[in-house]
Image (cartoon, rainbow, N blue to C red; front, side):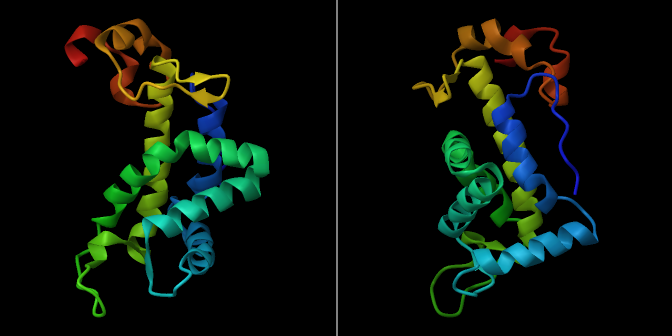
Length: 180
């Protein structure tokens, strides 16, 4: 497994989060084995589909197992706002099929073929949320700030704080006013 190297100005919070999930989003046989092993523990009802609730439970469990109860729970709460967005991105990748025993489709869930992408989305979306928190000063004493919006003033004041956050589009911003 690859241990993530911290980038320029990511917080330790996102570094620890990504380190717990990056191995499930990688290519290769070792990563495929990780995904296969963990899939059966997440898919509690053995329907070969994961609900957002099952995924959320696993995220918390994985963080607590790797970081300890207090730190794992803290990081789970900090990045919880991005889990549903990551889930929504991943669940639409495989072709849609109707589920026989209900009126739902597989697009309501993450399938085995989408699980690798789901974990990659966790890492990407957590990094984006981390950048948001840095700009909006949302990690005051480990507590997420009250604001869930970024003002133009916040952006102009804070965009340089995330120039080395790992997103190419943020690395060399010539005119920050034009981006917001």
